[in-house]
Image (cartoon, rainbow, N blue to C red):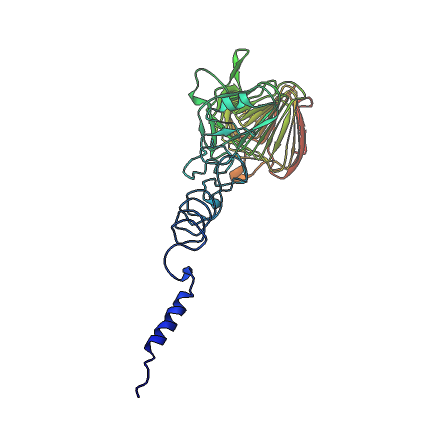
Length: 405
């Protein structure tokens, strides 16, 4: 007898097994959603997230990042880290299209934009004309000046700081292009600080038929301070480099400043100062008939051990400095070398006033002053002295003599 075949039974078992599988194992829509794509969400795009755009992230924009844009500073520009173009999302003043300020920062997020020729105020306003920045500044404000040659003369009418951001060698205020005779910087009143600037090209402010303060004229300022400045290439009748203030007790203080290459047609090639102080000042290569390096007039000036007068020239008297009209100069350890006068007082000439010097170096041999070191005008005439250094001495026109020389 033949045995029945097992093939139909095997086929039946296979069919039942296949019929138990759910529809996730095969092609076509997923059971439970209503769209025609092959993902588990209810939208009609082909990604696996639950939003309605066509990218594969969870936000509602159409880019391909995975995070929403971040604008922490609220300036309307997203941070670079979140896919935007704000290079500093912690400062609302910095963003693409911002006005570049003189602050050393990339304000507009464009490294190719230069700050040169920009003057800025702390409130964010910037200017390309220095006088406009000064005029816009509130009393006591700071105008920060970036590198460049500012071809203009400026007038300061109140308390202000004018700060050269990159220092005097890079920040030049040049008054030589103006019409007529003008000081490069005229200070009318207030407490004024000039820092990190080169002042050049001035021809002085007209007053009583003469010009005063070629580079800086501070006639009626309350106080003036120059720090880390260069005053050079200016000229006037009185105070080729600078003059003033002329109302006591207003004072001018020069600190770590160079006064060089200025000319006066009458007195004070480098400076004409009434009341003030020289602190770490180099006075060099200035010229005038009277007081080649400078002139102290009326009141009193002090000079410290870091102050030097060298290579100044007077065609008449006082190659280094002249004391005039009851002026008083007090020097502590200052150096006066290689200054010259056509008549007397190679280093110092006291026409009317006094000088007190402690430990001053008056040079010797190749650094000596010519034709003498100190000359004093007295009732009987001029008395000349030659010393060296360091030396302590006191000289006065009232006695017509010096002690210690």
